[in-house]
Length: 285
Image (cartoon, rainbow, N blue to C red):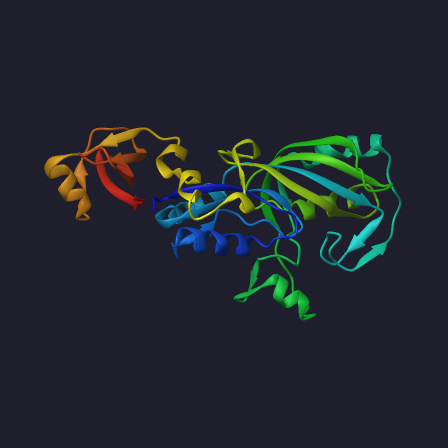
């Protein structure tokens, strides 16, 4: 089984961890992991790495993501979405009011994560502490919102509106719903979410989990090197031998990360050049 990433279109109601477990069973590879979780109520793009491609988690986690979300105004919830304990509270703003408030959330902003989240507090996940009824505080984090577009009314009752949001890694769409409601003097929760893009992955080339079998899954694994927007470096002879044994070599290229190919043409991983010295950064084969 080759190393790479499968672009899965996760169904609503499914846990991201269960998606990974299914991929492990089909590939017979224990080292699999998703590249950025989706809540069970959300659907859409969920890249799952197979083998050493899991070492690129931090690389893909920081990439831009695009969502289509629905917010329900005049509602509050302990989870900031409709899966929690709902309370009807606050007015429903007009479409014009919502549109006027959106520019205030563009750029780099400070965002308070939901208590029902994977954020850790003294080594424990926030959602575990919240379910136990424990009182705790999370710290605001800086996140980036590149676009925040009102698409129009939602389809599930009055007070619901749909948005398209492009943002950086670590952004909580549930928190955007809460904060938009507060900016309008009311409450809002997330009532639906679909991720349409995550870095180089989009819905157009995603596969449903139900379509994958032991016989066809390898054909859906995108080779790692095809997903990395970097220049190639080909090493050979004594240079290759030294690099594969953990040594560095002199190399006259600009500082940065490169895709490293061996003398036989096979992809090995990432190498880094600093001050004309090259070393292996990550083995990905």
